Picture 1 (cartoon, rainbow, N blue to C red):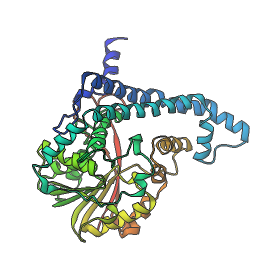
Picture 2: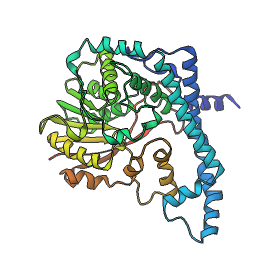
Picture 3: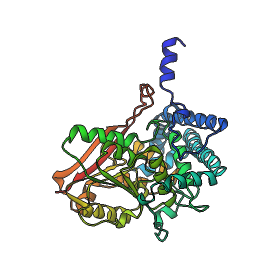
Picture 4: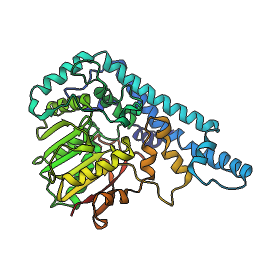
Length: 398
């Protein structure tokens, strides 16, 4: 291998785990834990860029000819592709490796967090007590059924489980593992989606100057803080049903010095604000972790709390299109069947245009566009295929 090849290969590697921003609420990481996360980040990158594409080769060379010979016709549905691919040893290997990588990532982050669960709660409380007026929790809030039926992303206890008083363990574990499962593509603070959104809006809608922004399903506030920093004169409010996520996210905000934010424990199906309260309502990779009933309630609530001329945006998976191959549809649904994401597949099939119109948004005001994720890991986005593009859809309210 010559120097040019070596440089090209190195540039295509993910950033090292040291590039994670160690904000004040972040877990302490030992040498061995750091090495483990580096291994898992590179394993994830290898599986995604080298192993996963082999499934298309297996489909074209073995599965499709075998199916056509056996049935006398081509595939009619992605479900048929799924049943056929499940018999193939390469797909079995690829799928097993990916699932193992996800479980190892959760185990690594969870073991790191549980050994310091008390100190993490103490750190979060230290920061939260500095600005108690911007964190509102509701111990009587019921966790939606769609969050209780599975442990999303294979995170034991999902986002909401609490083990001790003032617990932030699962939120800290989720924060620690996100860099690994995205191979560092979202930047040091894992906030590249909202940074990209801010860039898009300031460039394409320079006169849009929101005074109040609502982030629904805000989690630990990765994207909430990017919105707040992008629009420093706005009041930015995040709601989520998970108390650990909100405690951790608020502590994270205080430690990073972001002051124009509030965190409130609430369900996006019943947003606790008056009509016409917000200029912009935003979600980032949230809707696919709800349900059909919930998502219909949510869009009506978003429409209700938006002012006239307000903006709704969702960073979310794009829906399947008529020209999308059945094989691609099958591969897009992997997380539904293997990563505890039961609503993932439904989101791919849902007509988002009709969904938005059902709440009152007009056809002429609907939006859909792509954003290139902002990554601040210096040069590490220059490798082929390493820049991430996300789908965004939404609407302006008349």
